[in-house]
Amino acid sequence: MPPTAPHPQPTHSLHDIPVVDISDTGPGRTPLQQVMELMRAHGPALVRRLHGRDTLFVGDLDLVTDLADETRFAKAVGPALENVRAFAADGLFTAYNDEPNWAKAHDILMPAFALGSMRTYHPVMLRVARRLIDSWDRGARTGQPVNVPDDMTRMTLDTIGLAGFGYDFGSFERDEPHPFVESMVRCLEWSMTRLSRTPGSDHSAADAAFRADADHLAQVVDEVIAARVDCGPNAADAGDLLGLMLTAEHPADGTTLDTANIRNQVITFLIAGHETTSGAMSFALYYLAKHPAVLQLVQREADALWGDATDPEPTFEEIGRLTYTRQVLNEALRLWPTAAAFSRYAREDTLLGGRIPLRAGQAVTVLGPMLHRQSVWGDNPELFDPSRFTAEAEAARSPHAFKPFGTGERACIGRQFALHEATMLLAMLVHRYRPHDHADYALTVKETLTLKPEGFTLTLTPRTAAD
Ligand code: HEM
Image (cartoon, rainbow, N blue to C red; front, side):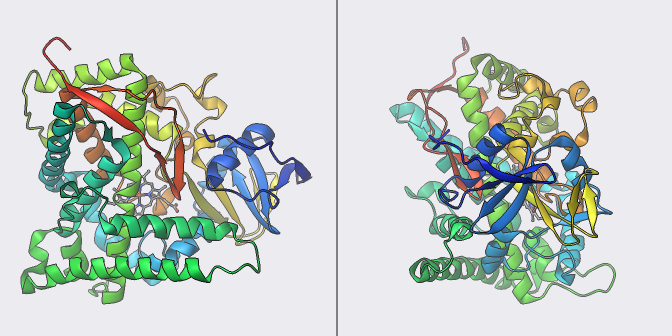
């Protein structure tokens, strides 16, 4: 946790909601963690005021339950996503609800994300998992630490590139992150830091640098598309996302996605399809490194499937049986949901939770990490404990207590994709290596709209039969 200055105090309250003006300090480089600290001090619903702009943040379970009511609320493209629209426009993530391209792309692409479709992606996910393992084997041989978030990002980018678009980023052949990733991270950072600008100050240099990065993203995406279009009329044969985008007709009116929208979708999927999953894997490995008893249970589960095999060949069905590994991922996503905030707006004037008046169109931002630390999670919500996600525990809890993938019809389309990819890799890694927290790593969560454990490294030793 970054050191924080004394917390700003509420200046007053509106309908019993404290209003905290942070204009003096600004939100800094970890704006979401700042709101977490404010909520710890002042409660799970507050207005953050910045240079006269108010944002209502909530983490309270009753309020989030109310916000999930699709008849009264809908996804808001809040100020952060408005900034992302500067490079992803009407892609699925950043489209307005009433933009026709949202429903069109949603209907066309949904079948590609049904649970059964993961069977199609499984071989590619496995192939890329092996790239990571080759790279980590080198680390294990030399004793060199591996950089966990960097390598997870290599793995998830290559996976979405190949599984979605038949495009190989070849990230493990590079010492540095792929330039697409560097441009993407800077674009996301620009989207975040632009929110805290002091009115009247000059940001032309930052904006020009952003434009160059956004152009680079578009150029890479054009290459990805061109590589496929070169395949001629068989563009759809690959049966992947890009094939669908280029050729699938909407069931209702027979139209296809237009060229500009395809570019926006490819940028969207390349970003949404890897950045959050990579963070989730990194946090899961962080918690495993810190909790040897949990690590042992995950290892036992993988060992039960693959025994002493040095190079197991996980099948699609086996991944569904890794229930404890999945619990570990869920618990990591509870403490650090890597897309940590999402916004909803009121369709009509209404009372949120029966007590907070909202005007039609007014937005509210849900802060996942605080929702995931409410009393419904027991007395010690900071404790990493995967047993919170047994089937019985889940059935006994409100479905609105855990929202790492958002809510309603605009919830994450790639959830099954992320969970299949991450569950398989996590199990393969713990089956093969004993991770060592060689640097006694102290968690620092980096924010670039998404969350990652910054500078987290591990050393690895191959497991032996005795481990
Ligand atoms: C939407 C989280 C992985 C593609 C969302 C939303 C969240 C989220 C919270 C809703 C945002 C909002 O309401 O404004 C995550 C997390 C992931 C993950 C935590 C990994 C652990 C993926 C993957 C893909 C993907 C792997 C693609 C392969 C999308 C898309 C949307 C979305 C396209 C927009 C859906 C729509 O509005 O129709 N995700 N996501 N995500 N996600 Fe994910």
